[in-house]
Every structure is written in C-alpha cells, then in structure tokens.
Image 1 (cartoon, helix red, strand yellow):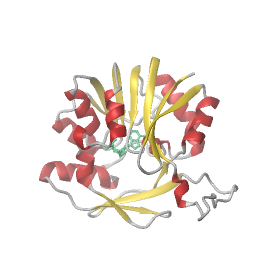
Image 2: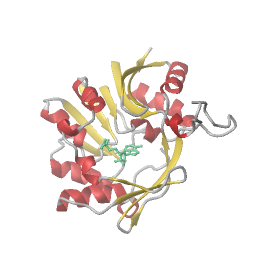
Image 3: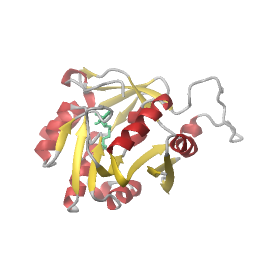
Image 4: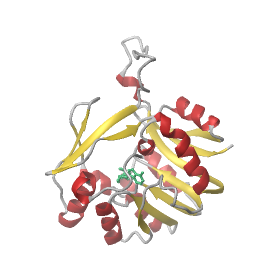
Length: 243
Ligand code: SAH
C-alpha cells in the first residue's frame, strides 16, 4: 500500500517471475521477516495452472463472473485460467517485470497499476485477491481505505474474493490461549523483504487477517464478509460484498 509502483532494481519477485518465464527455472526467491525464519517461495508455484491450484483458489475462479479484476496478478496464473474458461479479466500489478511477463504469456488486458491509486477506475463484478490477498492491505489501519477502494471499483451486486490466514497458531500456548499483548499491533501484521539473486526489495507490510476481525471491519465500512471455504492450515476464502 505504501509503494506506488516498483522499479526493476527493487522488484525481486518480478525478477524471479521474468527469470522463470525466460529460462524455465529461476534462482531462489528468498523471504525475510522479523517474525519468521528465512524462507523461500518456490517460483514454479507462481506459475501454477488451474489443476495445481489449491481448492480455495479454484472455487474463487469458478465463481468469478462478469468483468473480473485480478489484483496483484503476479505471473498471471489466475488471469490465464479465467481466460481459458472464456471469462473477461483485467490483471493489474505494481511490478513492471510481472506485467511484462503477463503480456508475453498472453494475458489480454494487463495494466501496471496500484490497486489503491485513486485515479484507477472501473466497474468490476468480481475483484480477485488471491494468495493471501489481504496482504496488500498492509496494516489494519488501512482497512477503511481498502473498503473505500472496493466500493469505488465494484459494480452493483459485485463482490471480492479474498483469501487470508489467521496467524493465531503462532501465538497460542499449549492450552490454546492466545499469548499476545493487547497493547501490541494486531498479530497478523507482518513485515517482509524479498531477494532474488542480487535484487533486494524494500521491506513492506503484509496483512494476515482472521475472519472475525475481517467481519468486524467489513461491517463498520458498509460491507459483509462470508467465509466460503476453509483451507488446511488456518486459511480461508472470504466473499466480501456490500450490505
Ligand atoms: N496473485 C498472484 C501473485 C501474488 S504475490 C498469485 O497468486 O500467484 C502478490 C502480488 O501483488 C505481487 O505480484 C505484487 O507485485 C502485487 N502487489 C502488491 N501490492 C499491490 C498493489 N497495491 N496493487 C497491485 N498489485 C500489488
């Protein structure tokens, strides 16, 4: 949310996506966070086809209809699957390298665009935010801006399909009680930094939100959230629509 658009020298995920598309393989996409040990995103996973997607993503794609907006589309995996189903989709991303790769892969309507840019307009029946899509909201305090944005971009009767995770399992003690300080920031706010080869990105905020907190904020902003499916590990798919 804080980054308007990325530049190639600060875009490790875009570099990994472009590398994988050009060479059929990519170096490690390393992920650092103050909350977790160093991790890695398998770049191949960003190129998953419909059959390789988790059931929650498949459900969101099947239920997408009308004019669809794929937010933070990455390699274009969801947009390409939707096109194959004969659906109409616009893909946006803040990464010029990802946008370039999506064009090369055949995504028909691609735009280098920040979802939160007030000048970005349109009227969409479905907005897709997948692979912990709540992440790009960044922080709980950005939720009012998020709801204003979807209110501007959703056609009457439209909805957002978003997946997220409840990170409570990181803070639970043996008895299942949450070991968090109420004074602390919300427990799903994470800082990440990525690196691909020698391309290092800036640190960014990424929001994981539990379903109850999402419902509360949705209601405060004129929306409702329904849990449509649960994943295998505290993750879920939500459908967000106007009250
Ligand atoms: N949806 C894809 C990629 C997920 S990674 C998939 O499921 O494989 C998140 C993507 O969101 C990255 O490509 C990143 O560049 C993009 N992104 C982050 N913030 C954004 C914003 N504000 N607007 C548009 N895209 C954004």
